[in-house]
Image (cartoon, rainbow, N blue to C red; front, side, top):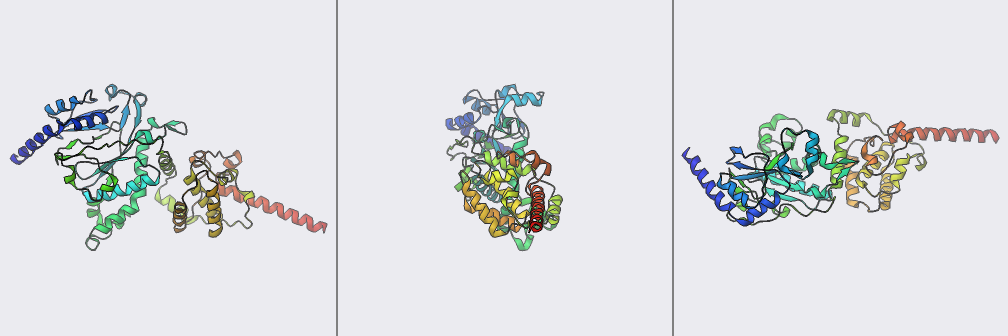
Length: 440
């Protein structure tokens, strides 16, 4: 008990000194704009909600009253002080003017949090999201932020601001799915495989490594409405460390001592993102989620489906939507590639011809995809079983500006359309041949 009191006294002393700094007050105040904030008192309780800072000096006044850390919302509000637990969903949507996408990496081991954070950096950059922030949680994890400005204001006439927490949750699940293989590899390379076995077994449901895997496997926290997270440069009561901003290239070598509140230097957590730079990232996540099925169903489909052999393939039997895509696209190049690869594999197009068609199509795009990306997608596809392209009622087509015809919708899938048209063409050719033979 005495040790606990000494620790608390030390933290309170550091707290007073730390939050007296004008640059710390300014950083907290600037970041709090349009957000609901809540002070925490030695992690025992939060202050009243909703609350907000009116002046930078409010921070020190709250500290003098016992506050030791500060937390804020991911959601951005027209007036945070109007928030209430009694508000309907409609009223909350009307008050919300946007949301930042926060990736909350949680782990019992800092080294594994760093592995996951580095993988996520690569994924964000892959999808064209170059402006994001990273900060130390103050304990053993990291927070990463993609600013509201980076997201489209609407998708398919759905207001993005209204889709909290649904869309951030989908983005989080999408990232975790994309990270899985590299995360398993990264952790397995640093753990004692002889003693614990590969963590891969645990991910696949083998409980041989269950206890150890549960301890080391980092996770991403799913958000909820009015969810709060530790503000940048807020202190952490248990460690007395600051929630310091970290640059991507510093992740690998980052150590807790780099977040010493007595030595910390201020850097901006919120980058100046380009308008809409996360649009493709969000669309990809939504498409993935919409087409996600239970693992058993996906495996059954992969096992049962066999490619259809089209005896005499010609572009004449392709559906109008596919023909339009083959003319080149402006938006949705990666989704278009997914459609074309799965369609051509499903109708038995040989690999050499398929690749030629794909690369020819890419040259027609307003901005061609990188050849390295196409190559990786082709390799991934050929390593896996053949699957059908998306049905016409999926947002894959409308999302890239391609509206299926009524005839296509009747066939449900491009493969069904091609099979039917192929049969009709064969019948017509046979009829013409028979007529010609009679005449001869």
